Every structure is written in structure tokens, then in C-alpha cells.
Amino acid sequence: EKEGVEGVSVGAILSDYQRVRVENVCRRLNLQPLAYLWRRNQEDLLREMILSNVQAMIIKVAAFGLDPEKHLGKTLDQVEPYLKQISQQYGVHVCGEGGEYETFTLDCPLFKKRIVVDSSEMIVHSADAFAPVGYLRLLKLHLEDKPNTPASIAFAERKSCLSCCDQENVAETEDCRDMSKLQITWNLTSSSSCVLDKFNHWSGNTKNGYQWISGTHFPMVGKNINDATKQTFSLLQVELAAKGYKFSDIILLHLYVKNMKDFGIINSIYDSYFNLNPPARVCVEAPLPDGVALQIDCLVHKNNLTLQDTIEQRKETMHVQSISHWAPANIGPYSQSVKVGNEIFCAGQIGLIPCTMQLSKGGVRSEAALSLSHVQKVLEAMKSGTNLNHVLLASCYVSDKKYISIVEKIWQENLKEHTQEDQIYGETKSVSGLLIVAVFPHLPKDAAVEWHVIAVTDDPCERKSFIISKKSDGYAIDCEVIVSSLKSSAAISLAVSLLPPSVNSLNLKSMLHELAVVFRQAMDKLPQDVKQLPLCFKTFYCEDVIDPSFVQTDLERFLEDILDLKFPLLILVPAADLPGLEILHVSCWLSS
Image (tube, rainbow, N blue to C red; front, side, top):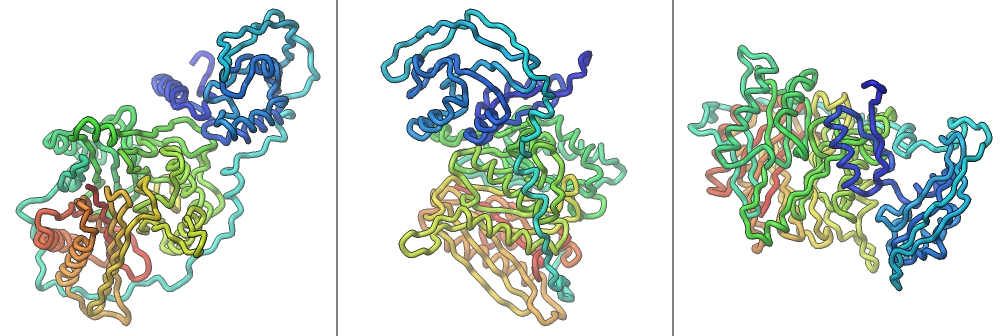
């Protein structure tokens, strides 16, 4: 406070150890960590340092391919070509991030004087035949005047990061098709909106330790947003404890708020329940029922396996709080992603420019492309070689229906970049993940697009998929299923769409029964050697078309009757709209 320090910069490029230690210190002191080198391409970064007139010489070597007698005392510009060569041959980090070499900076644009080494001594610490270790002992140095060049001029040639400039001038196109839903009257004479004797808060528990919880939303009668939020999380804590869980066992949490203006209050209370390495989180404003301020559902994981299986299913969290050029820092108490075994659960990503943490100004297409690139970077950081082609289930939330065609096109364009193709026949073999799109009134920071994915580090070419379609009087049900090549998880999408011409009357109970029947058909069609449990039956519905009380009552009963003990947890999420003539869209994740 005395010196007016607001942030701390860390030079970590790949080292989580360095970055996390600085971030933890900054968290305790309420300072902003900065990591602008984090996950930069090392060849580009080395070239940038050289072009920025950073004169640094190597003072220690400790790697295969580096020789104390040849390379100690050399400057970065002198050894740059050789560093690139041994990087390709032996996997040496070009910037020495693995401790391959250390440097001493003699001059840079921030120095008022340059350092000159008058004499030094080479010390061989280890005369290993393949990777000798040696360092320079600097015996005598002096300072030397340099031309009076302001640092701002020296840095004038530096280019902005790609995220800052590439997304600003993308041509904007919008879907101008007729978006209006057909007029529909529901025949509800055979349905009942009474509450079931028991309300199912939990899904089944899988062998791998997954379980989903929902139903944690409560009327605000006589309560302000602060009290309603505290009550919600207090009751969630009770529910978790009843099953032997803690908040630290939550790996993915969906937060739906009635009014995004209340997010600050909700977030501060949310923060008090999570410490280091919180779960991944997805947040949107949803048209919740009157009197309901927020709704949450979450996926928990706890190992009940053998030691070897526990090691294979260990939990890894990516919680980057530093502002960088890589991807957005966490703007709340959540992690960018959580990996359990081969499955990666990513938090919602919006089109923030990482180095400024401001929304891209290039329009909807710019936001959609930038936020999806953030997802790609997070996946790659969680496990090298992982890309959008490994996504099993993707959800895209937009703030206006006319943006749907834009995000669908960008999704396909990005998949095409990563799709593996058969070199002989030229046919695409990879099975891409399912995409569910829904419209919500507001997204965090007034973004236009938010992406959320669940990915599996499997072989996309070995996945199984199939489609089931059924048409009835006035509506159609389209079902898509994808099974990971590891057979550990699967995703099911069910969309209910109205059929033109306009429908005078539909039987809601009959439609929901058919939906449950198609879901059972999809379950029965899964490969025989796949033993997976459907965890969540997340049902996005058009809030101005469907009454959720009837859906909750009848659909839950049908799922339980038709699927017996394997019925999933029903989660109802009101959306402002859905693509085309869809009135209801189900997203289901299955795990072994």
C-alpha cells in the first residue's frame, strides 16, 4: 500500500509451480497477478525478446545438446538458430523453461545503463558425456552509458497480441430468417401439475464416482437476494453432506440467475464456499419462475475405487488467475477446467480479450470465434494434443436468436480445422461432439456468446454414433448419440420441434411420453459392452411455450417408469428461445 503496488508480474511460460506460487501470494495480498508470457509460443517469444533489444547471455547450461565450452557467454541472438535446432531434435525448450539454460541480462530498453562483463570464469559442475552442466562465475563487471532512448520508443515496434487485433474487424452476418414459433395450444386435460410425493435431487452414482445434484432453487418470498442465495447454498451444503460430499467434491456447477444485476451479491456469497481450485462454472441469466432468484445444479466426483483406479481417475484443476495473452483469467471463484481421468469439464468462456479482460469489439462473430478459441487453448493446456475434436458435448448460449446460425457456422469451421481425414479416401472419420444452442436474456459481462464443453481425451475416429428420428402429429423428435472410444462416457441430444403448418392443439403428456420412449430406444441401442448410467436429463424449454410444472410432473414419471432404475436426474432450464422451431431440447451426459 505504501508503494502503491497493484500487481505482480511472473515470467512463467509453462511452469504451473511458479505461476501458482505467485498467484497464491497475490490472492492473500489482494494483488493482481500478471503472466503475459504464459503459454506463449517459445520460438515466437524468443524472437520477440531479441527484437525488443533484450541482450541476455547464457551463464548456465544443463541439457542434452548444450556444451559449457561452446555456449556459455553467448547471447540469445547468437544461439537462437541452434536452440531451435536442438528443440526439434531433443525437445529442448527454446526459452529454457525446463531449466536447460539460465541467462544474465546485460541490457534492455528499461536499463538506464548497460552492464559489461570484464572477466569471468567457467565452472564445470558435472562433466557428463551427454549433458554436461556448467556455469559462468562473473568476476568483474562495470556499467556503461548508452544512448538516451526512451523505453517507449524501444518498444514501439512491438505488435499487439493476436487476440487484441485479429478479432476486431470480422465481417458481421446475422440470420435474418423468420424466427417466429408456430402458434400452439396445449391439450392439458390428461396432465396434472401436482407435486410428486418425492422430489428427486440426485442422479444415480456411477462406478467412476460421478453423481449429479439439482433441485436447489427456492422461492424468495419475504427474502432479499442475499438471504435467498445464502439459503440456497446452505441447503446445498446439507444435501452434499447427506451423501458424504463436500464443496471440494464439486467439479462442475451451473448457475442460472433471474437477474444478472444480482450477480455481484450472488458471486460474493458463492466465493465464501470455495477455496483454492474451485469447480468449473457456467453462468447465465435465465427466465426463472416468478419468485425464484437463482437455480443451480452441479456434478460431484468422489473416488470409491481401488488405488490404481483412483490414480487413473485423479482430479486435476486449471485455475489461472493471472492476466495473460493466453486465455481469460478467472473473473470469479471458478476454474477454467477440471480434468478427472480422461474427461475434461470446461467452464463457460466468453469473448474476453485476455490481456485487457475486455469484450471483443468486433461483433458477435468475433466474440464467438474468440471465446471458442479460449476453449481450445484450455483443452490443449489440460492435456497436450487435445482439441475441439475431442469435445463430446458442447453447449453454446447466445443472447439473441439471430446469432444461432453464426455460432453454428463457427463451430463447424473450427471442427473442420481439427478434423482428421482419411488420407486414402479423403473421407472424414472423426466423430465430432454434439452441439446444443439455447438463447438466454443476458450472459456474463453482457457477452453475446458463451461456450461450455465436456471433452474426452479419446480417439475421435473410434467413436460410435447413431441417430433416431420420430415424427408424430404436429411435432418431431430428433435424437443424436455419441459414445466415446474409451466407452467411459457418452452424450445424448433430444430435440422436440414443431412441424408446420400451424398446429391447433397438441397433447403435452403424449409428447413427453414419446420423448421418454425415444430416450429409452437410444439407451437400448448403445453398444452391448457399454455400461453407462445417464446422469442428467437437462431440458431446455421455451419458457413462453411450455409450462414447466406439467413437464416436471409427467416427464419425470415417464422416465422413471420406462427406464426403471436407470432414469436420469431431470433438470428443467427455461430459455428465452431455441433454434428453428424447437420448443424443447434435452442434453444428457452418461458415465460409467
